[in-house]
Image (tube, rainbow, N blue to C red):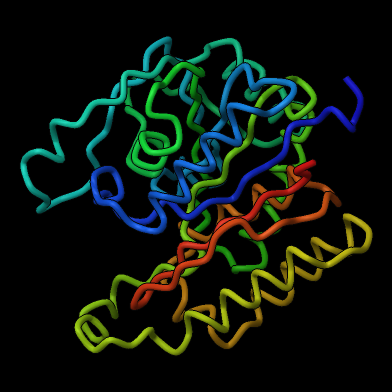
Length: 280
């Protein structure tokens, strides 16, 4: 397969667990995205998802290697019916082994995981994107780098994405599932005011800027790390980095491929933006 035949990379905002059942502009976007994925050529043989809701040990990536995907209901105080939702997808031990191999070749510590189910950062958006789970799904964690600088965490996860870039030529769809702006701490402050928090749009605009830089892969990554780490809105947009780091995995896997803004929706203290890289 040539580079021209590589599958795109997607960076989506999975939003809250309620996206599994609510009818919203983002659920509408997910439905259209699913139609796009089913029309991709070559057709994806598996989907690798990096969720903002799973971190391995310090500096370690964990990869689900199970044949079947159990659901992990990693949310609290939702109606009972939310904990009865099902998404009976298959895993892919073959893809998981390949991910572990590629990470090992890049000297990135990685381990197999069989007990933890796929979390709502995976199954909630995919339930709306691909209601019939016919494509095998493998979830991969972030690395826990909470004691490190933002720059270090960003660069590390770009390296993870770069290590996995080859999968795009092996009919694997790489999906980063975070949230473009994710501040739940201030949600109540703005809830009911009819206003979007002042940090949401500027940070979302910054993400638009860094993914649209057209230069060498190395310079693009350096600019993304520098500009986002030094943004005056970073701490407000992401009090913790877990929902931002999947986007850096996508940056790494995208290389120098052009980005496309697919969706934008600002809600209170959140941005549900989404991008693709390398779409034809």
